[in-house]
Length: 329
Length: 248
Image 1 (tube, rainbow over the protein chains, first blue to last red):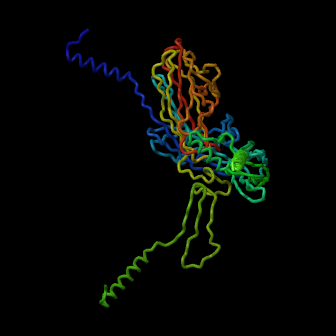
Image 2 (cartoon, rainbow over the protein chains, first blue to last red):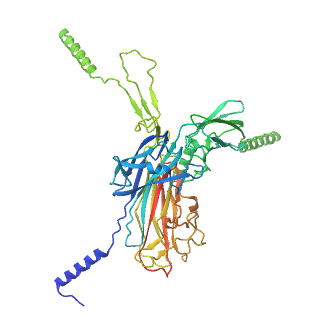
């Protein structure tokens, strides 16, 4: 059918355009960007106590976000400080609230490039069970609108970890599970494995160092261990800053380095390249301010075989050349 | 050159007055406070006219400055000796993945970038899960695209395996490092996929990237869909959630 009348043509085109606009879906993809401070808080309390911890949640994106707030208990996963969530509910959840200007909230809306200053409030009553409580406060975006095209909607979340220890300070029940290294090295750096088991009811923050002496009894190295939290009833491998820096270097180079260290197995590294002879490494570690203190010593031997072989080959070659020259004379 | 005596006296008088004027407005030394996230150091007030007392030493309180110290509890925020200038953060470059029109045996791959800043912690991980399989919301029978099990039928929420066959159907994902090396090791080989943990099936969320605390880590997440000719027509949707979790 041909439409000759101009008015009819315009009307037809307008209807088509309106129809198209009403059917067509626009995809407004927006980035989601959240930040939290502090990412971890440790609390040591003796009942009764009303604890308040400030929490800053920031929307660094360009669109308003609505965040749902959840409390999730966790336990240690592996020995490197990673966590995994559990399904059991903690006794303190009933007395834990997130407050916005003093008002308990379960969700929060934050405008673009804005931050919200909230407070975590925990009421530790006199009858609270003496124990540790580990949980994350998770802020998750809640966009559940389904598009009218094949799609996967993405939500984003960010967590802050709370290590809450309820009960008086006592000497913790801990064991030094491992302090080891290889017996023989051709060259450095030297890796030490330090694993501490915490069988106590409360988390601990051990402080320790490794001192290294050469075969003449001279102190030639000292490694300060990183201050990490070891959860109740778990084992953690303790690294040092050098190991952390090596991992960061590996990250920056996109993994294109020869260092074999990985994030899953923390170690303490002694970066000394040329080593020769017998060495003694002594670990001194205090599991808490109240003790106990463990001291353990190991020995290792270093000999640069490759370098020595090269030197021997050079010497033999030099002698051979000198002898040959003497023959010609 | 100033020869006249009166001029000389005038010159000295102006100089003296100027000195006294400046001296009157010199800043005084009072209490100093230096702090970071973990410590606050308070210096006692300095009194230049008093005798120096050897007991007037600086004091260091090992407590966060914003938390009042109570007798019944002690709080420490952040990690010890942290020099991080940025808080822990996570960025996803898009809130939606548009798969477009799905056609049988024609795999579709879409990507989104995931970035973390974990300088403020020793380590971190990002966990991921989906609320359900890709489901046709308008379909009366609730048709869905199942999560892939890859070419050998063995990939899962934890284990990745190869998915290249166009006759292997389903919905899955993989992770590629852009900066850093934090994608899960199981994605080291190309074309290796997993499927998202499905909360509706009581799957546990899985770590998609993890690593040491560092400034800028970026990964690219690729979503892949392939459907058979028998797939019911409809609009398929689901919700995927990424959560940045600091280590303890």
